[in-house]
Image (cartoon, rainbow, N blue to C red):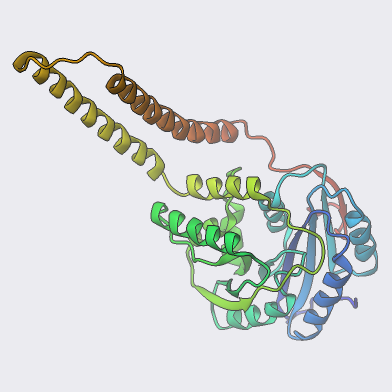
Length: 325
């Protein structure tokens, strides 16, 4: 991969491409080659490729270390352990130097060839160009259905609209990047944070290809945790919902009390039984536990924030100037 042109008095804009990685040794050779071809097709731009190794246990770090040694455009941050994809993206944003920053996965489901179209829209004045999946042949019906449900729920609950069928694959201008760098929260939902920042945004439709190699790093458990972060980070409506549930439960309880008193005082029908009592206890207990669980999620997030630990720990840097990063 040849080096990018050195900046001069009227240097072309620098585009930073951030690629979080976790056990991607099977695909990195192809990823680097396609990034090289994409950059060659954009002679009016300079590029840097910031790879963030999120605790890989295979040969990912060695491949990227070698790439950084032979190509000054390639930069590597290697975490001391796995901190999560959203934290890896945030680390890349912290060190990116570009006039515009592109977020994409290293597994080639975000095709590098689309970056040129994003840059063209950025040159037209858009601050955010987010990729919208017009087709998802690699995803099954269950995953597509749960994704639609997730976006329906989060847009119903959140005060900030988040475009459907989008991931983190997007281009952001420098002003948007600076806003994100000033957002220190630990439970990060990047696409929601970008929507919250505002600025001029537009969609770019593309077909999401099948994974070139490897396997998904987002099993069901991680997907559910990610969905919870998205909902709880951008809405207090679950708390408002718990209040509504409490009012409904209290109203039903009052009706039950009134009915019991009426039957006791004005009628001779009084059957002592445990069915109604058990139903009432189970209903009230279920509502209380649900509300406590919702409240606990928010309290847990407050606890994580007030500890003020660093978001990540870097074990190695490659391709950085001395003292940089």
